[in-house]
Image (cartoon, rainbow, N blue to C red; front, side, top):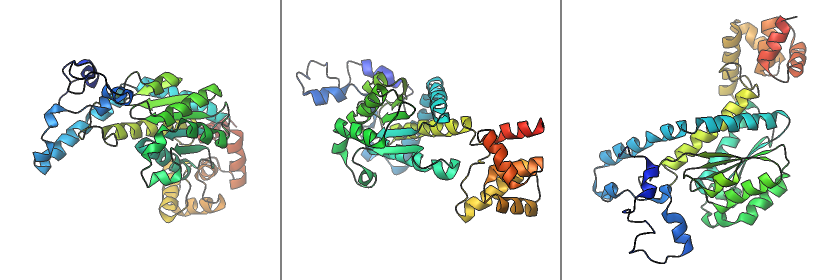
Length: 332
C-alpha cells in the first residue's frame, strides 16, 4: 500500500473523482459534497482488486490496516484533552452519550454496552444513540442518518443536561444525525466531541473537541466499516477506558470495578483481588463473599485489615477511588 499522506490526495487535480476537473461540469450538490472526501476516494492501484489472488487481497487489506493506529496517534493530544473534559463532567454526575448512524452508531452502542460489565457504570451513565433506533443495530437503516430532527428528538427525550457529554461519530464527518446531535448538545451547554475520518469536517467544526483520524481511501472504495470503522473503535475505546481510569474505575491496570455477573467474571474478580493484595485464595473467597463480589471493598478490607462494611464506608469517603482510600487508611 502507498505510504502517501491521505490528505495529499485531496489536492490532486488528476484524481478521477475530482469535481474541479473540466470534464466534470455541473454536478448535484449531494455528489459534490462527497467527491472531496478521503473516505470516499477510490485507489487507482486497486482497480483490478477482484482479479488478485485471495492471499494478496488479504495482504493489501492488512497493510492498509497498519496505517490506522498511526493516524490515531496523531490525534492523541486531542483525545487526551477530550478525556479530561469528559471525566470532569462525569465526576460531577454527567453522562457520556455517543451519537452516530450506521457503522459509527453501532460502534458507539457497542462501546457503551461494554462499560457496565467492565467498569460497573450505572444505567444510562454511558449511552449509545443510533439513527433509526435499536432496530438499526441489526438492520440497515441508511436513510435514518439524514434525519437531523431525530437526533435532536433523541437527545431531548434523553433529558440532556449541561453536565453531559455528547460524542458525535461519523466517518465522513458530515452525517446529519451526528452533526445535529453535537450542535444540539453544544447549544444546551453540554460538552461536545466530534470523531471523524476526514479533515475539516462539519462535525469537527460543530464540536468543542474535534478528533479527525484521517485514514485515507478504503480497500473497497467508500466502505467505511473498514479502516474508518477501526479508527473510530480505537478512539471510542480510548475515550471510555481512559475516562474510567480517571474516575477511579481501575487500580493500576486492574479492573477493580468489574461486575462479576457470571462464572468467568467471578473468577476474574477473585484473581484481581489476589493480584492486588497477595492474599491466599481461601481468604480472598471469604472477603468477596462478605462484599457481595465487589472487588474494591474486598481489596481494601484485606489491605488495611477492616471488615466489609468499614471498607465500603472508606471507599465512599474517597469518592470510590480505591487508591485514595488506601492512602487515607495508611495515613491513619
